[in-house]
Length: 213
Length: 213
DNA sequence: TAAATTCCTGACCATTTGGTCAAATTAACG
DNA sequence: CGTTAATTTGACCAAATGGTCAGGAATTTA
Image (cartoon, rainbow over all chains, first blue to last red; front, side, top):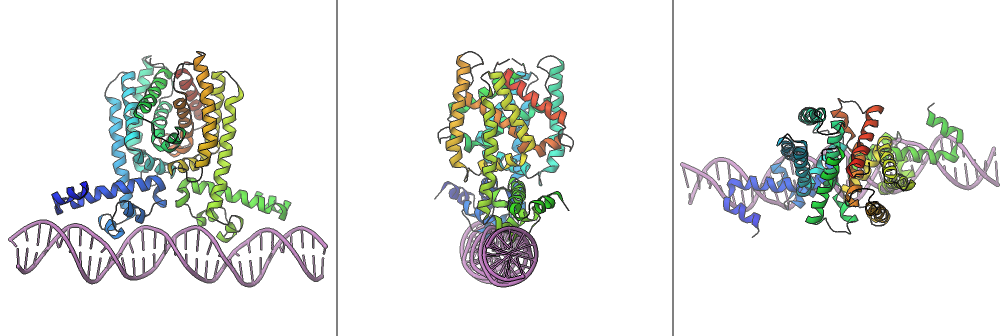
């Protein structure tokens, strides 16, 4: 009996739905990450979730609904990272924490990042409203914070937008392009030590690059 | 009569194949960029190339063959950018030129970059051999160059790999995520001036970040 | 001009796709 | 226990997909 099976059994029918939905969402995330919405098939997802396709459709009536749920989860993780930006008003401290958080997410949840990348590449058919509201508001607000740091002479004058893009791209690269990085690393994933160095380097270059240290 | 039609007419049958293949490849690039290999359909490509699907299959027998050709073209552009790294032995000059070239490519050929991104996300089913040979060799060779700069005290000690990843991610972000950037820019693409600023900022932060200036 | 070659395309086909459904199984509860 | 509600699934379907093909049109060549 597997761990999941025990968990299901123990809570019985009450939580079957909960458990199954979690399994399906995880499978869906990895398939959507790899093939995008159009390229993914419900059969592949069902197979990866180890259940008949019809069972999957019992929990998620349509591919769209399933995808929507996956994307919502990812956006929540993104929001969580966003918060770490505001833990402190010191530029060094705030940016360090933010970059660290984003690097951690890239390592722990690379599939989510890939689904997001696919969404944007497809011109955000599902999350366009998020981009225009939540993401835009968050960005503008942090642009103000960074601009204040510049006005106070705490960091060099750079356009805050492009600084943010640099942070996003650098950190997400370790998720989206992990296969390429792995290949260049001799076919093995970055070790904990290597990943820590990558993190340190990213923080070091960006902070020094804007004259924060 | 359109420009293409005139071009076809003028050279007549001799170059019909040439012209048609170019049109198909361009259409294919944009469809593959948006939907990945699995998500793309030959019908979509044919429609975007304004010809019946059967005609497309006359020039490219299979979807695979068409995709392979698209990817080859992209890799050649990548190689072209790679060369600019070696124009000069001065770190400031070399890195500036390389970043500039990569930013230019992101602006002029965003579709190619997206196809590349899709390939890597899918674990490089088609270009894995490139990654392990050409890309790996190029990378190791440039890692040595950068390491020499470090040993000579011309730039700060950072792991050259992660510096390269930072350059790749930052520059390619402007192609792969251009939709997100556009949305955050109020729904309009970055102007020439804005793009120049983005470029300058990237160069500035990276060079200062590694203590090159 | 006649023959040969290249190009074009509507109609077609086997397979895969997202999704349905009825019938069976399992669990919940009075 | 027996009834009700939730879960499971093989079989099925219409639409979409990659690809084929026969025959016609255009162009080149002899």
